[in-house]
Length: 78
Image 1 (cartoon, rainbow, N blue to C red):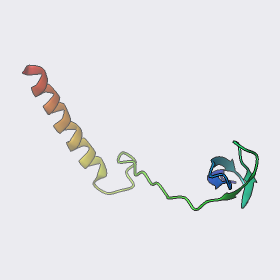
Image 2 (image 1 turned 90 degrees about the horizontal axis):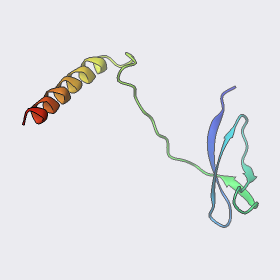
Image 3 (image 1 turned 45 degrees about the horizontal axis):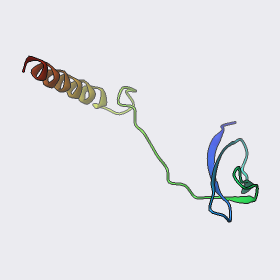
């Protein structure tokens, strides 16, 4: 079973985050103790360029890293 983090909002506008194993719609607010309802949260997705799951991503990362090293060397020589 996967643990997921959910955000809950109480009537006093306090936001509580909880790691939860099962589907729940309400929990106790960690600030005031009132009943907090699960919010719809924005999804954040991060793609790992080294993972190899995305064609060309490793080569792009390597080229960007080489460019960064060249810039740093130029700055050190100045």
